[in-house]
Image (tube, rainbow, N blue to C red; front, side, top):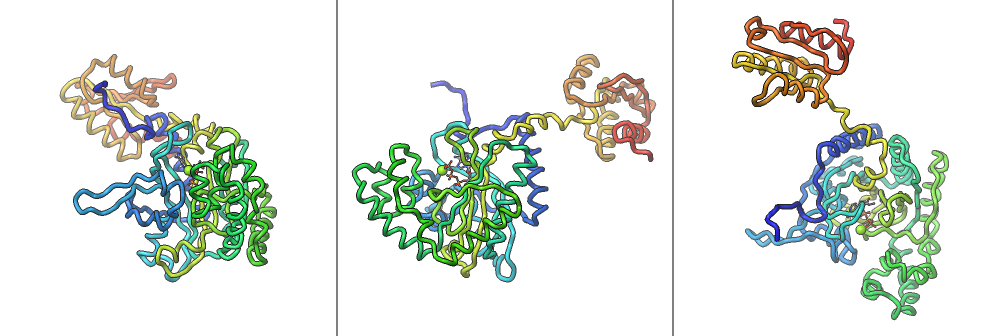
Length: 426
Ligand code: ATP
Ligand code: MG
């Protein structure tokens, strides 16, 4: 076995080029969330395991086989690295009484952990941006979430995306459907796979969520939950659709879509693409009116969605161009002991004036430093030798276009740069 240290399988490093793309994406996301009035919430990566068994559901893929759980060696507590963000968000909202008086529009963003087989668009540490609207009964807020997604895909220029929509009704409607579904699936018991057999009685709806193509026909013939919806659920669903039509957001109703987590009711939706192979869904969400109570809060309706950042980044072609946009204004080169100290101060003066400046650290002749300045993509080099330092000046040399080199005192240098870079008149 090689001695070389490697990152954990399914957990990725983002090197500067890609990390810059991510930062550009995160800036767009933040502006977008603000424009809809959503506010950030940050919760810990580690939670008690029971939060997820209760919040996500015992009989889900996540809780049955994907969670990174461990016992805290020091006190024996059962802990889990969060596999998703909704349970934590709701836990925090309850714990801190956030929805005591007013409903809340919240968002989170950060790493999630699921032990799955890594492949393109599927990792063991991945990242989600999630939006939760707590205390809203909808259907306007359901539609708001879908419409805001559509706006983001348009802003990002994503192509080949489709919205799939379904309603899971309420608890009573699901109970009636569940009984019929179990009766139906029992007829095919021998043909079900291991997951299917196990879930037949614990969580039959999940059988419909299977990715096993061998079960396609069985799933296609199963009783559809949507046919069991009562008047109130249908009205809610119809209102969501009306708002979508008014906002000119196309959708496809997919009666087979159930989503992978237990907490959903009524509206559920997924954004899919033909461009990511088996990882077709890059964003999903819906209403979860029972979750707040399920986690010990005063009953309150809620809905939300989460997008997988890796999958969206794979779709965001234009983002490639944003890599490397963050080039520095200035690279500071210097030669000589006195020059070094003066150049260090000049670099700080430049930053105080709002410029980005890379100070050359370490040794090197002027020529090799100038090469580094060029490679840094800086617009200007600031050059200091002992002679300039003695005179209290630094020379400024354009790197990207023709132009004279001029020597100025630090303050004048800043003014001159501001004029050149930003066309400031004053
Ligand atoms: P999938 O069916 O692909 O396993 P999921 O239903 O488990 O997805 P959700 O729990 O709804 O996914 O999470 C929301 C989004 O998070 C997904 O649409 C996807 O973009 C992203 N996501 C989920 N699991 C992973 C993963 N292992 N790696 C990368 N992204 C993921
Ligand atoms: Mg999954």
